[in-house]
Length: 345
Ligand code: NAD
Ligand code: TYD
Image: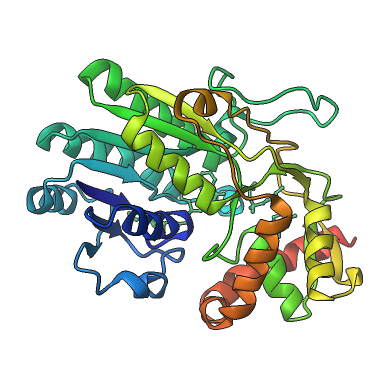
C-alpha cells in the first residue's frame, strides 16, 4: 500500500506518519508538505532514513507538482492533513486559508480522479458545526448536525468538506471525511493553547487566556486520532463522514491551571486578555458512529495525556525553543501585544 500524507511535517500529520510506519511496516508513506511556518522538517528526522518513507516539499495548490508526484508514486490512498490551521491567523488574514484549504483540496482530488485512487481521506474538524451553548451539556455534534461555521478557518474547512462530498456524488471519487475535536500531544505548534501555555509557563511568561477562559473544548490525544484515521481509511464506508472525539470536555481556564500546577508555576502568571472575535463557546463530539461501525474509542484519558504531553515538551525543549526563537516572535508580538493592552483596559 502506498499512501501520500499531505501536511505530514505538521502536528497531526507527523504523528500519523509515525503511527503508520509503526503499525504497517510494509507500507510506503510519502509526505508532501510545503513547509509553511507550521511545518518543521526536524519533526520528521527520525523517519527520514526509513526506506519506506519519502519527503517531498511541495504545495498542494501546485497542480504540476502534485501530478508529478502521482505519476512517480501511483498512490493507493491520499490522506490530506495539509491546511492553514490556526483560527487567530484566519481572523488576521483569511485569504491563504481559502487557497490552501479549499483550492488545495480540489487540486488533490483532481489528481486522484486523473490517476485513480482507492481512497481520498479528508482530515476535517468539528469546528465546521459551529458551537454549542454552555448551558446545554446534553447537546453534541453528530455527523448530521448542520454545518454552521464561525471563523474564516472553519468556513474554509467546511467549504473543503462540501467539495469532497460533491466529488463523491458527481465523480464517484471514493472519499471519506473525519471531523475531529481539538488534538493535543507531541509536536503541537506552540501557537495553540496547550503548547503555548506550557512554553510560556516554562519561560515564566504571562499566560494569555482569552476572555474569561470559560470556553470548552473536547480534547483528544493525537495518537487516538491517528488510530481513528487508520481505521477509517481501511474499513470506513466510502462517501461517509466520521466524527472523532474524546468525551473529554475541559474549560480553557482549567487546562491552564492544570499546566501551572503540574509545572509548579503560580496561577498569578494567568492574564485575561481580549477575547477572540466570534469565539466559539463549546465543542463536543458524539463519536457513536465510529464506535459502532469501526470499534473506535479514545484510549488516553486527559489526565494521563496532558502529563505525557507536558513531559514531552520538557524533554524536547530544543524542538519548540527553535520555533519560538525565530519568526514566531514577530507573530507573538503582533497577536498578543494588542490583546494584552486591550484586555487590561
Ligand atoms: P499544522 O498547522 O500543525 O500543520 C499543517 C501542515 O500543513 C504543516 O506541515 C504545513 O507546512 C502544511 N501545509 C500548509 N499549507 C500547505 C500547502 N499549501 N501545501 C502543502 N502543505 C501545506 O496543523 P495540524 O494541527 O497538524 O492539523 C492537521 C489537519 O487536521 C488540518 O487539516 C486541520 O484542519 C485538522 N484538524 C486539526 C485539529 C487540531 O486540534 N490541531 C483538530 C481537528 C482537525
Ligand atoms: P486553539 O488551540 O487556538 O484551538 P481552537 O481555537 O481551534 O479550538 O484554542 C483553544 C482554545 O483556547 C480556544 O477557546 C481559544 C483559547 N486560547 C486562549 O485562551 N489563549 C491563547 O493564547 C490561545 C492560542 C487560545
